[in-house]
Amino acid sequence: MLQKTSHFMRQANFIDGAWVKADSGQTIDVVNPANGQTIGTVPRAGTAETRRAIEAADVAFRSWKRTSADHRAKLLRKLHDAIMDNQDALAELLVMEQGKSLAEAKGEVGMSAAYILWYAEEGRRVYGDVVPSPWADRRILVTKEPVGVIGAITPWNFPSSMLARKLGPALASGCTAVAKPASQTPYSGLAWGVLCEEAGFPKGVVNIVTGAASEIGDELCENPLVRKITFTGSTEVGKTLIKKTAGTVKKVSMELGGNAPFIVFDDADIDRAVEGAIAAKYRNSGQTCVCTNRFFVQAGIYDTFVEKLSAAAEKLKVGSGLEEGTQQGPLIDEKAIEKVEELIADATSKGAKVTAGGARHPLGGSFFQPTVISNATPDMRFMQEEIFGPVAPVFRFETEEEAINLANDTVFGLACYFYTGDLGRAFRVMEGLKYGLVGVNEGIITTVEAPFGGLKESGLGKEGGHQGIEDYLDTKYVCIGGLGL
Ligand code: ADP
Image (cartoon, rainbow, N blue to C red; front, side, top):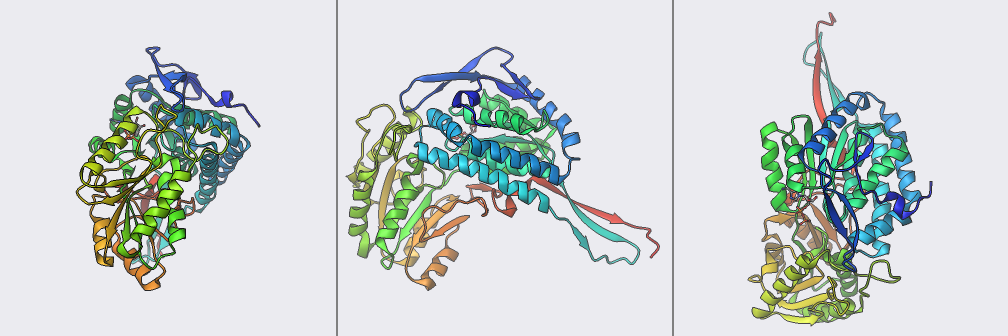
């Protein structure tokens, strides 16, 4: 059913099928980053509310796990349809709290629906094994069962689709969930409660709690009823959560920070590389964990690439996400702007040159100009630190080996991209890069059909693809003996 944006903007938490306030009555303000105005509040829940949500999810799990995969798939299809029927309203809500352009927000909501549909289908293909037995009178079965209650903690940069990637496989496999969206963008998270309610999921199957991150996080990590934590966010918080889950030995999936390299070789199609670079750098104002952090360009084409990238960056239309034609919205907050300014100042003090943008946008607030920086060198902070903003530092290299070494010189290993016209080089470089996602002559590669996930300090586990449901399943070995065969 078609609903208005206001229908999804819930200023309450969703616990055990009811919309409730925080016990303390306290709230958190939600601000529109495009104009700094408060658009509403959400409950500032803590330990007690989280515990109740976990207990509701545990009760719901006892019957939800016994439903058939087909039944769950039907509800997930309804959820998919509810999202697509309301794509515009959900996208508008997302823009209001997050800032991205309406076109990108619609894309994200569409992606959320696609994840739900994908897992509606995958849930019906959770196969076990019948293994040839070494004993004549015994049989070996290997079954897959839902892990139980899961805790999902998500960030502000993709407030809708990051929950889709977690709720989709959780619900399809028979798990129940307690989700905590980021405090900057809680409405797109709470909207999942509205959508699940309307699709007909039983009470307690999905619970959404907003509020004090460490209180909610600690309860999710330490409560023995929760069997898995799935987190998308910074590496720093991810490490804390891994430590906290150790006490009850939970399964964990971690989608953490990135430091994506984008390598352009002399033999690449430069225009294609520039087009890919714009998409891989400035999408969501550079605020994605797969956004390019470092461009490495071979000496022979370096000047041409910098010139073309700078010209293309300057053409991007910056504005409020709801304005027609906007390609880059504001950054999430003032802190994000300050970090970008610091990184640019560090680079220019070490010899880098600003060839496009380089400063706050005349629109004010947290708008920043799409920026390109040439003469980047490995001693600059963005060689190791995630920028999370619309700044493209371009480093120069001479040889293939040097490019691979520079690209791998980081603790992160999420996404990487490279452009070449040489097939042999494509394989050598692909095999040389220690990253979980590789784009060859492509700057945007995420899709529901493929496993998304990082290596090294970028994380553990995969989301998407058929692999994405594995983390929500326990494998059980059953030996049936005394068969008298
Ligand atoms: P970002 O830099 O993208 O804001 P964070 O890792 O700080 O990334 O936040 C991602 C999510 O983790 C958000 O929902 C945030 O509220 C939550 N979070 C932050 N600190 C903690 C914590 N100590 N325990 C649990 N969750 C946390």
